[in-house]
Amino acid sequence: MDKLLLIDDEADVQYSFKRIFDQSDIEITTANSGEEGLRLIPKLKPDLVLMDVRMGGISGLEALRRLRQIDAKQMVIMMTAYGTTQTAIEAMKLGAYDYLLKPFEVPRLKQIVLGALKAARDMRQVVSYEPLLESEDYDVGIIGRSQSMQDVFKMIGQLAGSNATALITGESGTGKELVARAIYNHSKRSGQPFLAINCAAIPENLLESELFGHEKGAFTGATNQRIGKFEQCDGGTIFLDEIGDMTLSTQAKILRVLQSGSFERVGGNQPIKVDVRVIAATHRPLEQAVANREFREDLFYRLNVVRIHIPPLRDRREDIPLLINYFLKKFGLAQNRPPKSIFPAASELLLRFHWPGNVRELENVIQRATVMAKGDVILPGDLPATVSSHAVSEAPATASLVSPSSAAAAPISDVSGVGRLLFQWARAQTDLKALPAVERELIIQALLETNGNQVQAAKILGITRATLRKRVEKFKIKQGLAIQ
Image (cartoon, rainbow, N blue to C red; front, side):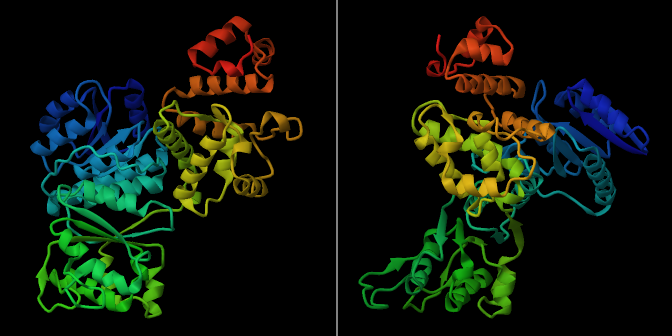
């Protein structure tokens, strides 16, 4: 019988696990804290540990850190209701088998637990963990609760202790450079230089000199010797963005660096040795470029040691509310003022847009909307026409949230859909829990509907005017919305 240790201070989570695995050949032991779990592990010798990140006493990550000092082979799955880029990366860096977000999907939970138990059986025979890494906390600015982004975070953590070359693929605007910087920030080279080169932005005749430097007199205008990016980056990491646009001749020099760690400056004949980790990125399908003989096959295989694919934003729409909230706070901070909120109908338009420019385009739209909005709330009319028109044309027949001015003309028929949308939006409001966030937004909508008349707004909401006034004060709703 497999032995599972569940470390979580929530009684309902412990109860749920026992019910979910009641019919399985698994013996479940529970602990209420990281300290208690660490005391139990040497005696219990569990096949698998499932541990919450946030608990009373030491955190789950700290408990995992201490556990690694006791047993480097212990199989661990981390869990949290507060999924962030940082916790996912740190958990995987510390050798966690996987990382689960609450609330759980039972079929996926069972699949991961059974897979981990099988891996634990195999590991007892042949597998050992690499030495641990310690790292500062980094704010990498990558946002996402979707499974596809959680997979990206895991791969970043797994790459942290390695010098392996990585190839990042994805459409323009998905955040390839952010992922490259996250790999660097969590690597052993984080104290050394990081240089990013956009191979598509530098003219072909200058790129080789930019990367490898040149000797005095190497070409017209080369009046002095110049040190290239690879020399500047010795000991660090170089990020070659849009490497698919590089010429074949420059590709040959990149291949030599990867193979031998040496190169020559343009116009020089003296080999220069460097120790540089290369991370490359492209939005082009390199396999097709290889087939068309536009990209060297040998270089492709050298780069494609570990590949991380970043999904387009349209394929992870559940991350859009989180990104909206992140950008609103970012631009509010930049303007030294509280972040603006967004009307649910405007949020829905953003959720339904196809985002050809991905996260970068969403960021630009939110920045524009914060500038264009006349008040503290971003309305549908504050969004670019391209977003509004495309979102409307692509909307499902059972359209959900609408603005007050069009409510009568567009009745809401899919109440459950509205509920899901509103819940996604409310969950992204980190300053309030979901229900208070919804309550605040409903009050704002009622005041907008009634042009700030508190008596009428209170009647619509089904509360007294005194209660409404208390809620306006509690949520610090701008008084300009409310007429006394």
